[in-house]
Image 1 (cartoon, one colour):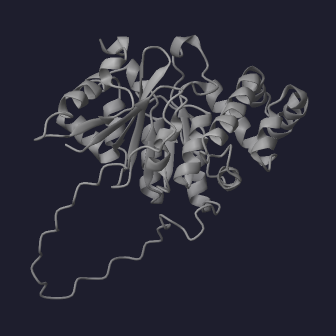
Image 2 (cartoon, rainbow, N blue to C red; image 1 turned 45 degrees about the vertical axis):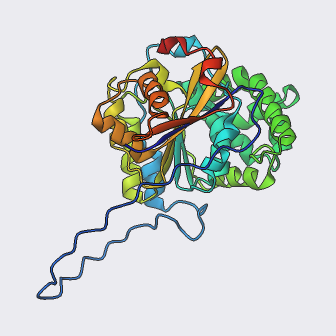
Image 3 (cartoon, rainbow, N blue to C red; image 1 turned 90 degrees about the horizontal axis):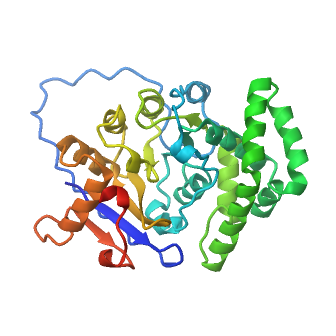
Length: 366
């Protein structure tokens, strides 16, 4: 089994960087082939776009841009989690993953809102697909993109979410989306989320500045990276349900066909609400074209507003799913605590400023 690393902490604790991710498992040398008796025929010439272009934020080639724009949405859910739109993240120690993500590049796919821009800045993602089953969140990301276009600094971005600027922003939305249905959806999400987003971005600026954490809210360089991602057409929000059969499968096919590696999958605590065998989740993850630099990020809530921050290699998670040894995120986390004391099979371990015995367990894992 490959290693799963768990990094956790209280919302007010731990300003230090997380430990380095576990070393990738060594690959076996390829088998030796017999010397050919005649030179093999030359392979046919195929025009394949490079995985890492010289300018990682250049506009996508026309065919790749068309494929990205054609990503299909999953059907809307019957109900959203707790009947609440999560316009802002309620996980407040994202920086625990900062060094884990640093310069991984490639594609970033994940649920949620503002946290995705943190991860994209740290990882220098070359393509971002916000994938959330709540259409309000998808529409909010499109509004984010519009406001990144009209802001040149983190402070200007925050200002566009203020009450004073809301009339101006609504006019920008009406000009950008002429279709009445799309216009109403974007205006709806902006109006409902505006105050929460403003407060959240202000908190990120203060919190990251105080702790000397570089992010798109405290670093002009990272802000510019996100702004350029949007300008290059390298951000495409889509309504996606991890347990359905369409959106994530389309993302996997896009990654394979364009040779843009899928480097980061962020799940938040979505796995807290379903088992690995639910719907198409297992098949979706097994179908993702992870490479040896791909990682999976997830959080595990406990005692109300506290979270454990976990990361694992993408291929390692796929190995767990193929082995069929655990059925839920809770089982995966519980097994990690047992294996951490096993010198012969230290597949999983935890690094935490708070002892496991000092915190209450996630009630859904009891």
